[in-house]
Image (cartoon, rainbow, N blue to C red; front, side, top):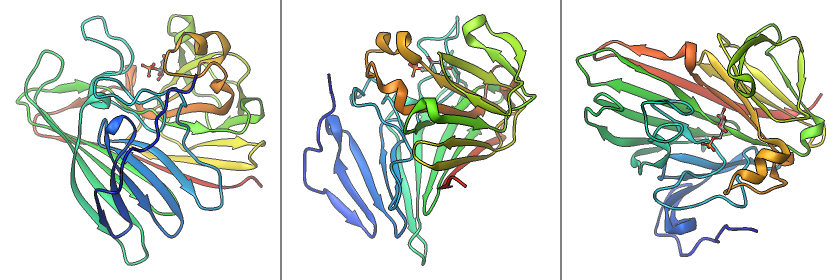
Length: 300
Ligand code: BG6
């Protein structure tokens, strides 16, 4: 069942607190070690695949069945969804192309306290039917929290309408012992009911079947309370009006090739972005920023 591979080689180079390696599938990656935490970032999709505070289980879920291949997305961590979310009739594939592009590492910095920041850049998009000319940057800061920021710079002479999403997979101890707090009274589009618009009535959302919802107009933080791991994870965001909550549950899990049949019990996606009604309309030459901070503490 497990389709993962171990890292193949010796470190290629090191920078204080950062090691460069060929990761799984021989894809280049960075291992980061700070006084509080460890993290891994693949250049493929600029995907953060791991973040763990020293005294806690991993914060991010990564499927044991994930592909690690140049033309495939990685299943877990934080896939970057851009420039469209989901399937679009006039565009190829699901969730855009940023998650399968090879990004370049542009800069690394270490703060005096040991926090590490890296800046990655996606090879520039020329005008195409799917996407007008633009440049993308991704900034990742690793300390006692994980902070990621997606920056889209228009290089087009025309308005650029796009969707973005940081499709974050969280590790949970047991999905049955999880509640998601912060979305009460928010409207959502139920993707399992043909995008029907509904209103969340629960202060604490429990998951006991497949869930695939786009909560709209929701800039506020969300908390994932995990009674099994006795952990509360806080998702704070800037420049994000949508929150997507996804768990494939039993039947759908079996249809996803790069996802274990039982793994739905150990994960939940709480994704921060701007999708459907919240899509971004960027004026020529303007910049959009989507920033998410993930932190955790013992459940009180
Ligand atoms: C979620 C969508 O964001 O991503 C779901 O709301 C989708 O509809 C899920 O199934 C996973 O998508 P993918 O392309 O990574 O399999």
